[in-house]
Length: 168
Image (cartoon, rainbow, N blue to C red):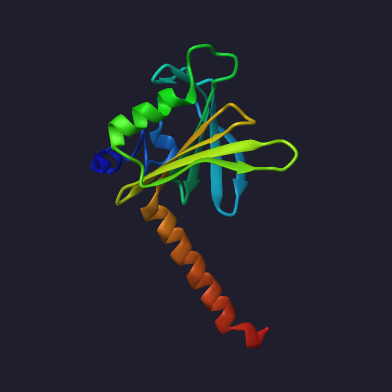
């Protein structure tokens, strides 16, 4: 079932490796630029995942290529719909998660539970995260190929800096 994750290579028409100009289904608005990443947001995308509305989508681009997609789900004030709707769909689509940390308790004054599940393909990683204090789970899709390139590029840059440290 994990092969499906790599086959889909993203979320719906948001395919990893596409440039900003190749994404036509949604109106992308530049949100911020950080460390060579450009983050574009899609507000009110009018999408549901197993009856759970998607509140917003953030698309992360490196070197003008889509490498990460973050969906923020909207459960606030919705009766009969819960985070389990999304988890059930992910499990039926991709199988049992490889990493699962159900209900990690954090905080001493106010107890907050964090539930994280991950499915890892050869090219794509999908992570579901629910924080009890927010009631708005997140679903992350990451593409390893471009991220690995960025890491290798950063390591080469650091190596180059370390090589010439004595010259400074």
